[in-house]
Amino acid sequence: MDNKEIEMLSKYRLEQSKENLEEAEVLFNINKFKGASNRAYYSIFHAIKAILALEQIDFKKHSSVIAYFNKEYISKETFPRELGKRVSEARFFREKSDYVDFYIVTKEECQIQIDTARLMIEKAEKYINGKLKK
Image (cartoon, rainbow, N blue to C red):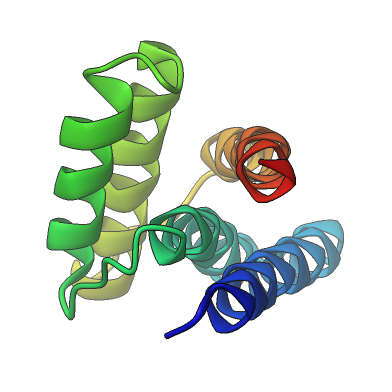
């Protein structure tokens, strides 16, 4: 990929992240917390993938994407450690919600995930814009 394609992919993934957040907010507002939680998680996930696109790094498994992000960006404090913790929590709630029978996402848990998605987008956008200006 050339630099223009890398930039386009990163921006595309960031837009996906923003769309996922919008969907999460709509679902949250009609008390569909399971769906909102899922969309918030995917917002976080796509924001991370937007960052990784700049390195031309990609993985098939969600766990690998998050592990790489934690290793290369959180542990090196490119992004705050608290964000890494919140990303891991969002993944935990998404998996529990999607795969554990009778698990019900609370309004409070869902709100935390939406807040994490907003924060992740804000940090990712700032990081990406900084890298693209160089």
